[in-house]
Length: 198
Image (cartoon, rainbow, N blue to C red; front, top):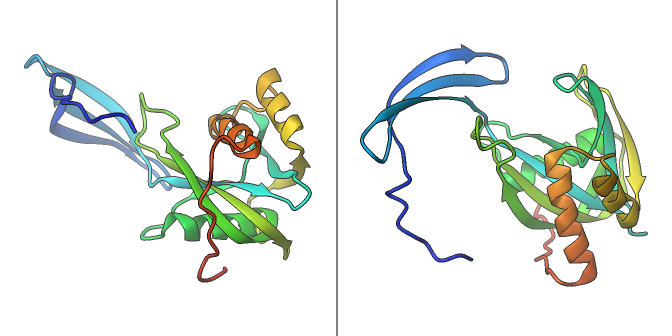
């Protein structure tokens, strides 16, 4: 890990906040900030509870994916399974819940890989990425109004889709880097069996 540096010459400090929108899912605020040089500016951004995404590995090496329409983009996206953290919910529990709800799978072993901020310029959302293996299919339990198609891809297909623009979702592209390095043996994961299943 990189050595910690003194970032005081870059850091902004909040001196005021105004609520712009509080919706069912998103919360948008405008903050007035004191800049490092003493000046001030405004920053508008989205507050988000965070999310978990899962790279589910089947025993034959294929990866479980989803095709889902994303209204903001106006298109169907291919993505790794993911979902929003509920209040007070741990990342592993959320990953287990979302994997079962969306794909119908439970996993025997889990390994935390990394966390990412997909849109740092205008949202505080953080996505925690986990790998799951030893999958057993029990049947999807989609939320009301949720429509998606579960598909699978070999690692080669997955990485090819990241390369040719078939996969354009940021968390899924970032996960591709980990898939490539984990499967090659360059990066190690700390696999563990969860104490409970959903």
